[in-house]
Image 1: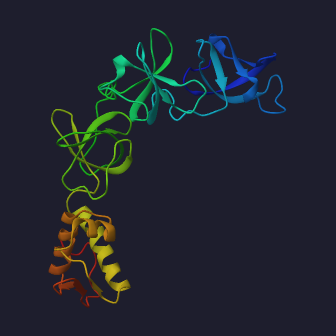
Image 2 (image 1 turned 45 degrees about the vertical axis):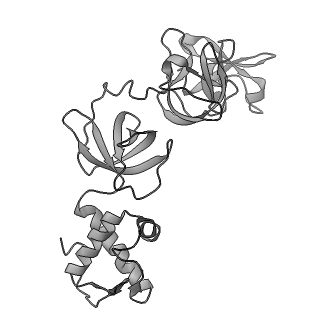
Image 3 (image 1 turned 180 degrees about the vertical axis):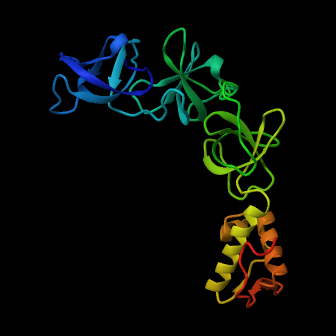
Length: 288
């Protein structure tokens, strides 16, 4: 049986002037309009299509792929607003995606990019969007451990930091302090669980917590020193921007890595800058 809002492999059952009709199982025959019909396809052949409703609420199929299917989250641009029902989003298909007013968490404007989850409205069976991303977050309680690698999508900026959707399911927060790269709404990151609090809320980090994030940075510093004749102009007085550009990490992690290298007698400070010392027995995991 075909599933609305997802890709399906359906069988061609008959030809007609508007296009091919596909076997949608319990949903009945579904039209694949002529502009999407591949050359040479025959009756009885399977075809991979996306099923949704057209502007007249008829089930149709397309060989195009939307920017997000049902159950997925994406950053989409507002391309129109109907004052009676809501905003329309460009999701890559002929029919724009509706973002009803009731599913908006704030006013939106044409040209704005919004982070939404795509779902099927139970009453109308239409595919719509919602800015209420934590709608289903309680269905599957998070089971994350500190330091666990995760992927998350930035959804909103707050005074404390950036709200995010972790692995497409659970709300999390990335704090302003310690950010090592520019962060923007709609951007995806690979990061780490900083803490899972007793109330179930998730704190996020772009770098591994504790020493596990320091060792790789220390190794990158040593390699950079080796490639630059044993000396670098950056040190713990350098700006966060210069450190981020050179090593892709926060100033806090960089200073911790310098401290590790200094204690291991691997570097010395030349004020300004740092110099590499001869220590062939050193390894990034050898000093904590």
